[in-house]
Image (tube, rainbow, N blue to C red; front, side, top):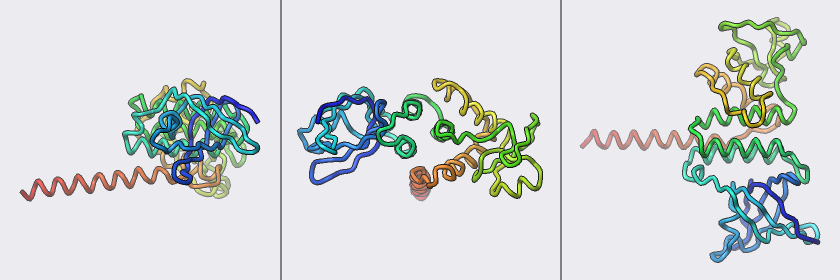
Length: 271
């Protein structure tokens, strides 16, 4: 038994009983931790404002046998601007779910945690498209997890690529290990292929290999953005073995928003 202090972020919360909650923390020191927050949902609880979902800070835990109990917390970042935007909330939930899968219990993974925090910070404070932030986050996490796609050689036969330049489209195996050369044998063996523009390939190469502080310091054109959207989520699903569905909430929200706008326009027109 004893007290320990951890720096990290609340990545999930599950209500228990009338006032309690189980929290999943992603910490610098010990990776993923599950703890019990007694009374956190009560009206007089001081924990509620310091240990809510997506809150980053210091958490003070007491270990009682096999259970970690949250006794107090000191928040340093709440990411409030994300909480007030439905679309950003969906993207943040997507990031948190991926991070929970990559960061395992009792094993520090500082690079993955820092990537999560960087993505949330950019989503909250910088004027970047959430979908672009998502693609960068996914690519970086894939690279950190050891699944950076092969870009300089064919992922099937190993033949090196020559810089095609111009408008050459590269075949990318979304259920494989990266780029595939144009030979019929390799393309047939690769399964599902998505064609990537040189700009998309450069973006993947940059995000996979740049410094941690620089992953969002670049731009892509519309074609590259479309190519990344068509390939990276499937590549992530294949290598992590699950479908991430949080971003479906964004599509449902946008559909609802369009329907409401249409009704408003029709109502104004009918007056």
